[in-house]
Amino acid sequence: MTEKELLELVVKRLDKIDISINGMQGEITGLKNDVSGLKNDVSGLKNDVSGLKNDVSGLKDEMADLKSRVGKLEEAQLRTDATLENTVNRCIEIMYEGYSLNSERLDRFDVDMIKHNSDIAVAIAKDAYDVAVKKAG
Image (cartoon, rainbow, N blue to C red; front, side):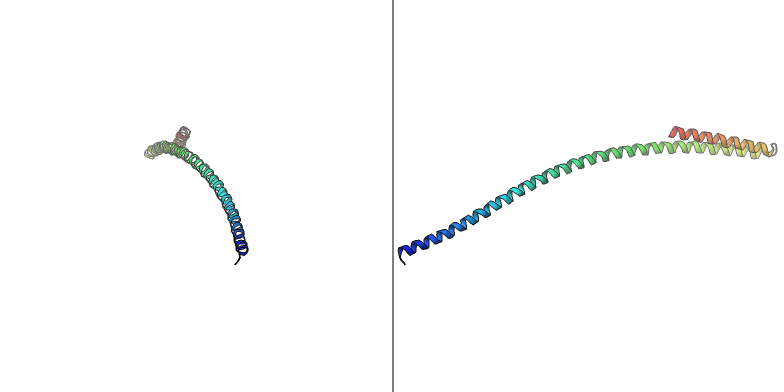
């Protein structure tokens, strides 16, 4: 092989190496662009996660508020139940006492009087119940 042929062979090989290097540079540039895009995506994900954390924190606050309100409603319901129970029991006792008195005196009073007294006892019980409901509500 002559020097000229050797030199041409070296130049051809250098051209191939140059083409390979240019191709690698293009691939490296593409990889850099891909990495840059990934960085942007990760940054967006971080922002999204931060937003989710804020949303969850807000939901926790709202849940605590709801629990507090439900607790207050339960307490009010228990007070209302106790008031109504006491009032209804009292009304039933009054009605029973009235019934007992009427039964014992049935011989002395006529039926219209007994009916009238029962109506009064029912009206008193209804009024007591209405008062208790107004106090509770």
